[in-house]
Length: 90
Image (tube, rainbow, N blue to C red; front, top):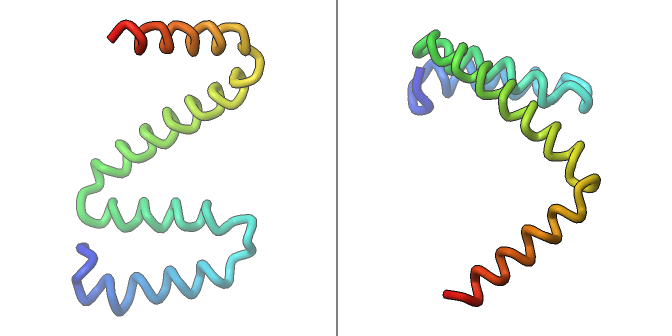
């Protein structure tokens, strides 16, 4: 299915939009995630596995970035100083 196909424009998109606005705010992103898995899986099911893997990796990395962002201030300051020195040498 491609974005310009009649199936997408007149069946898939209206149904997804209707359900999206019917779902409570809390679950809208989750619904869109699964709707997009259906969309990409329609064309090539192999991409569903790739998207799930990519989502898990990105979520895990984002979680660790958030967890350690404020706990390592000394290392962040040292990295900033090193970057400044490297920039001045150029």
